[in-house]
Image 1 (cartoon, rainbow, N blue to C red):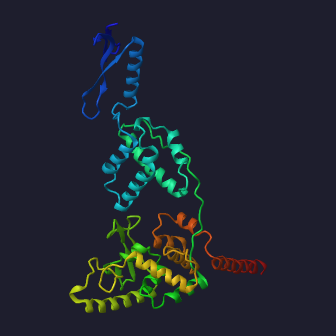
Image 2 (cartoon, one colour):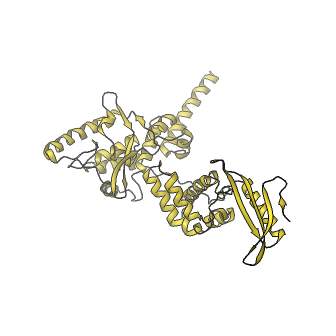
Image 3 (spheres, one colour):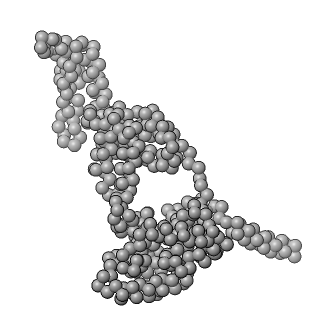
Length: 387
């Protein structure tokens, strides 16, 4: 029985422990790529056949890079480690979203499974059992799990990502809501005199997001050049309002109509009056354009309540969201003759294809105007050809 394996990496022999004879293998499976030290292992079995099977399995594990897997590491333990070690550079709000999905869905479903034992079938079953969860949310949950497991694979904790090639529920594309025509006019009439009239109007005619408006500072507005530099937003994170980068982490430069700057000039005049009245009590830490009378930022809930009141006053459905004013801008811009690339840049979309897909239906007026323009062009062509 005793003797070296033919490649010289280990030795087989027999030992007696507590009066029982065991077959033993002691050897070097290879070398740690990081430290250069040999990876040594001792394996015991009751029979020669069992020992050789265990040795072959250990060699196979080493060859596929699985020897560094912590044997007791569960999926839940790994996800917590991933959050701590690998998500430090993501936005806090995004990290909180990851944490919520992990704690609410992934850990209850997969958390107790050993990381090295997790199989694609278990992931698929987990995804299928997310009853009552919207398809888009299911996709996000899977995306978080996939990212975490991809890192585990790159670290050698697992051989491959078991979340690959998982079937996800189909996401039905929803038509965007927007205000146009008479609806838009009624809403504009309804916001007149509202404390946040200026914010509603600028949202309609720039396409800025709610957080971008709430976090817009005066030093990002250039009245001479007629531009607005959208580079940050105000977000409510764990009960505190903080300034963070834009959704895409990229700034964008807007060149809206002069009407927008007329509104901003009036806001500036009114803010100067409030600042004078408050004196030393004025609090505008971030030099924000839109503030309360004290200089503090406008609360999202306050803006929401005023928005809903204006919708009701205009006789519009309460299902319309503040974000739909952004869609309203896009449709208004299309109807005004702006091209897709211009609208893409104004909205900060990552591609013009996304903008086209989002607003493919546009509005009835835009379709009629397009048909009228085409008919005029056809008449011109036919007139020339007949002449």
